Image (cartoon, rainbow, N blue to C red):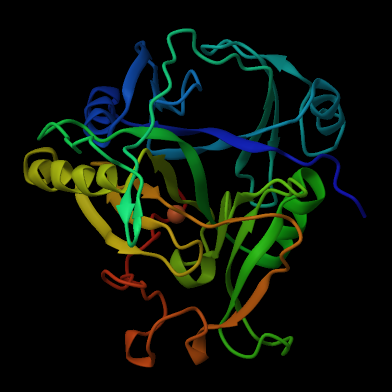
Length: 340
Ligand SMILES: [Fe+2]
């Protein structure tokens, strides 16, 4: 059955945090800029054209969902007519536009938006060309970063959720938003119906236009958060690899004073190939810096990977969750934020 719509991007995430001043400070150190702040709402942007990429509401820590972008108003109407989604409303956030609000199988909020205008003060920035291997792309130009400057974030790139039934969740996201699998992680033989599914990295179906290897990552809540569904992490694409490393240095320097926690990084992933660096804010919500990920068009079928045979990547002694380089994941704690 063809999906109701095929989403063309993800645009922002919404978290709930007990103290907006603390979250604002964290996000500034993380690389964002304040767009609007009131008693109960904080709106932050990156360097890209989107008017905002993270919204924080004041309250008990909680994940309030993410927004997918519809390709047209007609598509937004189509999704709003399904049982899982609401009537279209006008957005009151910067850039305006329209939204239909839904809930997935675990009750996690999913917004679909259309018509949000890019910010008027947007100025395109580009990374320095790279001289690598035998390619000299940067000639007569010196590479200089100002020491201590905050890292540059381009966009909200993907998010991870812990879900009760990974396969059923992929079906739901496929049926409503056209999401397709890139990699399925099995704990055993993929063809055996008894084999547990650890997680799925899934992407947008944009036909022949390449899409990020994953815009959504669904992890088995029974394996990471005692069966509780909720946020695993939110992830932001950086301007360049230097921004991942300079961001790491900045957060590392401030972690004791501001109560930040390095979750995992810096390293390069197997699934998606990004250079990654994960940090917990003082409320323990995981935010990722990443860059240089794989992009795939819809012709590429998904991989079924048996983690017990090391097919997720790495040497047998690395165990599951290895990096191509950099530390392995700490399975005891990663993504365990118990129903947030
Ligand atoms: Fe990620």
